[in-house]
Image (cartoon, rainbow, N blue to C red; front, side, top):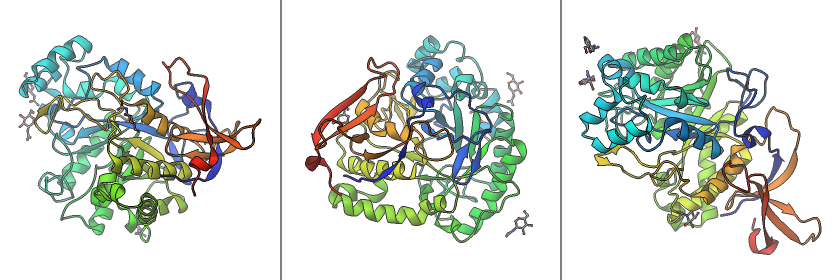
Length: 446
Ligand SMILES: *[C@@H]1O[C@H](CO)[C@@H](O)[C@H](O)[C@H]1NC(C)=O
Ligand SMILES: *[C@@H]1O[C@H](CO)[C@@H](O)[C@H](O)[C@H]1NC(C)=O
Ligand SMILES: *[C@@H]1O[C@H](CO)[C@@H](O)[C@H](O)[C@H]1NC(C)=O
Ligand SMILES: *[C@@H]1O[C@H](CO)[C@@H](O)[C@H](O)[C@H]1NC(C)=O
């Protein structure tokens, strides 16, 4: 899988320093960019941290202290967490206030998780689920959150959570819960965005209700919290925003609206593995153009809020898709969030300790699952375009397969090298460039 293009690139210091220094909150939008108070671009390079499954506790905390996980996220080059939550946390007072983390684990008979949680996060085990959700470290950086109604794994067409009017999806209850969540984090400066609903879907979905209720939900969030970006998901499992092209979203406020899309290989079955990768990439990108990419040309921000691959490396379908996706994401320099952070889940679909092979962390929640995968997405973690201090701007050619940039050797003009500034803390070579020499004819195919 190969795509070559040039664009302006700068390695800004803010990822390299593993922090987001001097960022002036709150965030807003300017044309298609998310910017801070000074008008500087803030590129969301997030990772999804699930907190919406049945125990309603952010995953991984039976394995590592919450601040260690937070530190790890920053070391891996992410600047943001997309923290997920079930609507019940805002609608069921008993669940939110009268169930502690320990009691929640007990109710699912998760004895080992209790032991691990007590060891790693003793100060959190006997607090309520809502207090645990508000733990500072979960909000240590830019944070957006999403949700479904019933705690559990998401999503299916027929799970009663898909669209307004479904069994567990009453628009009035939903709007009130959004307002409450927005108010809960009003004034919490690093909660920067709120997504209204995860993966709208199912037989009831239709464009008119989308506009009616999404606008209503967006107004509710904004009225309760003027700081957060309001993030709107598309239809068909958040794969389709085409209907916004001809009918604009009508809101009473400006400069806060962001659209989100999800894109996975498996949405196209096994086509990536079975077709010519260039053909399928071309076809899918054309479709993406109609379903979401057009927003960028209209000056509206698009957040690729879920994508990911099986990081064990053996899934050809996923691997080819990632080459196509990362070329697209670099070229368009979109904001994004990887699925997922998760090493393993406390309890997913009835399985205790289920491993998430799409996760950046291993099941110990400490080791990186696959560092070559992280390298592949590392260029995408830096802002490449948009308003900001372009101190070190140059043109480069991106090699999606490795995530490296193509540099012509100064000494030997027939040689090209692939280079990357390695930016991950905790690696011994953190400030060195590493290079792999190769012959152009071996690699460059247009
Ligand atoms: C929470 O529990 C306390 C007693 O432990 C009880 O008095 C109170 O009514 C409960 N609140 C809710 C919302 O269930
Ligand atoms: C609210 O949460 C409690 C604790 O999990 C649960 O027992 C109860 O059934 C829930 N209520 C509703 C209406 O779902
Ligand atoms: C936008 O919404 C406002 C009130 O919410 C309404 O007065 C106006 O007619 C709407 N505009 C369009 C184009 O629908
Ligand atoms: C990481 O992914 C690569 C393919 O991208 C694969 O060859 C390798 O085996 C994977 N490593 C681990 C530790 O899973």
